[in-house]
Image (cartoon, rainbow, N blue to C red):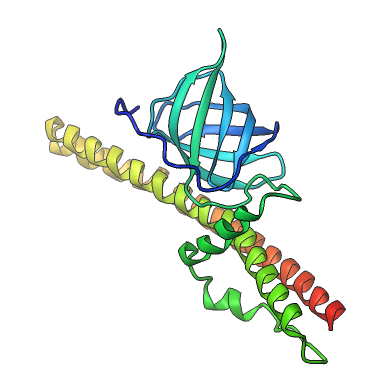
Amino acid sequence: MHNGNIALSPRRSSRVPAVMPIRVTSLDGAHFSDVCETLVVNAHGCAIRSRAKFDPGVALHFHSKDGRVTTAQVVSCQPLDSQNFRLAAKLDHPGNFWGLQSFPNDWTLALTSSLSKVPQLPAAARSSVPAPSVNSEPSDANAQFSKEHVKKVIVELVRPLHAEVTIMKEKLARAEANRSRFEVSLSSIPPELEQQLEQRLRQELGPKVIEEARQQSTRLLSATKTAIEEMAAQVQEEFRGKS
């Protein structure tokens, strides 16, 4: 864990008192994973009741009870009572990760600004989204409303995928670091034994790793395609209802 201090940044969106369970998993190698409760939330972060103390700068993974996932970074962690800490965290991707039905107006600005940081969907995924059919030309007010609504839908849809990709990149980086340390330790092993170890690892672990990666990629792409189709159908129905 880091030992440096990170100053609290000015609050960019209004706080909302909210108590909800969130599974918090550390990404710094400490192997911490526990269900914590939020105290207050906003579009850029939250305060959480935690039984563990974290240093500022530690990367976290959040998983909501509704299945949403995202990553965050510890800003501060202060004693709350004799057994708990008040953990303040900043979301890597601002937005309504908390799934609140109603929230302050300045959250909408955070949702809109985060669109510029969202990666583009693959061409195959974009081609599977049908274009909405509108029988009559909407008024300026309806067009503006529809545009803002579609932006929110896209943000909510892409955020979990982006978070999963970030987590996969971090896991690959840690795996690469561990592999490098292992290669250094091989310098003291006789060449014959090194060759035997390398051959055995390739035979036993190679196919398993490839198959697991293929299955995870298939499930992720299937879930993403299904979610896109469902959200596109919902947006299309709303457009038709307002035409």
